[in-house]
Length: 176
Image (tube, rainbow, N blue to C red; front, side, top):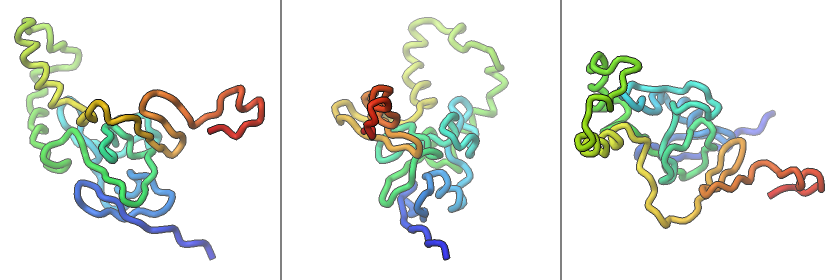
């Protein structure tokens, strides 16, 4: 008889979500009934799972305070804190989704900065960036943080430790 998978919980937007060993955050949320994972940048349209390989922005969430983590490749673990991003007040009821009704004002290929003056763009840009932003950037000085993905580990400061270097591979080292 096969071993039963370990069952644990993590927190998504203040609610407990049950996960099994081997789950990614996205697979556990999908099993729990979640279908909207984020909102599109421009019109705040609902986005669900798409690639399940970490190549698209459809599942980017805030994981333990780190913004823009792709939930489809992030292993679920007990006690992890997950929050949605790019939606207010919730993923289901995003107030900024009303912008999609004005899409006729911004057709494809229309460059919105052509009709502005320097002073007006500088005044509007911070608000546009906040609305179209991808999460809250961590405060400077928080130090280095490890992000663990299903296929590699990455250190926030740019050093990669998931794959062995050629010299490590040639010399028979086990890597980091």
